[in-house]
Amino acid sequence: MEITSHALWTSIHGMLFGALYLLAGSGALMGLYRVTRPGDERFLRMYLIAMIVFAWATVLTGTYVVYPWYRAVPPQGTSDLSMFPQRLLMSSPSTIEWHSLGMEWKEHIAWFAPISITMAAFVFIRYDRNLANHRQLRTAVLVFTAASFVAAGVAGFFGAMINKYAPVQGGNTIRITHGEEK
Image (cartoon, rainbow, N blue to C red; front, side, top):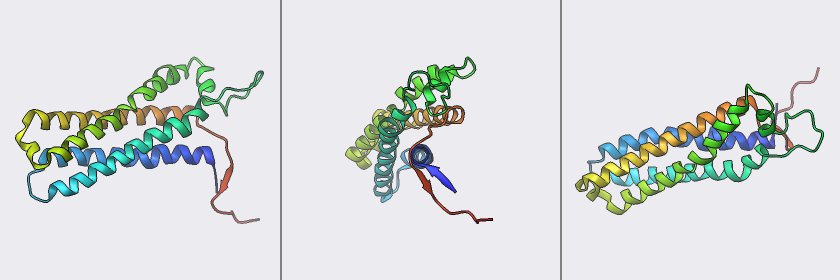
């Protein structure tokens, strides 16, 4: 069983950091909506901080680790574009929209997730239990948390579809297990 380093980092980016963030998003929305009991704030504070870590880890690994491999330019005369995902998508009319719409959206909307959850967490931590007394501010925190969740979901959807049609490949091969020899 083997995996390449590029595929491993793509999986860490999307299936670890991104998936954990999306899972945490629904819990944060419910927690922020219902926080009324003493003691809930401490748990929710830690929960939101964990979400910030997952959101920034997802976006930063996507931007600075996986994205350069996606945009790699093939050498002149290359006919096999399987190692160059962006060019592979752009080479066919049936997949070009995954780049021109999907990746362009993903590049921009993904950044909204960590920015908005960081803002929501900061306001929650700053106001603590008093947030319940500021209805408009509490609503803003809920809206930005929901927007962060939706942004991450859209980026995750496009990332999964793009990886389906043009996976990031290459890098060193990591051998996980050795198969039985025949």
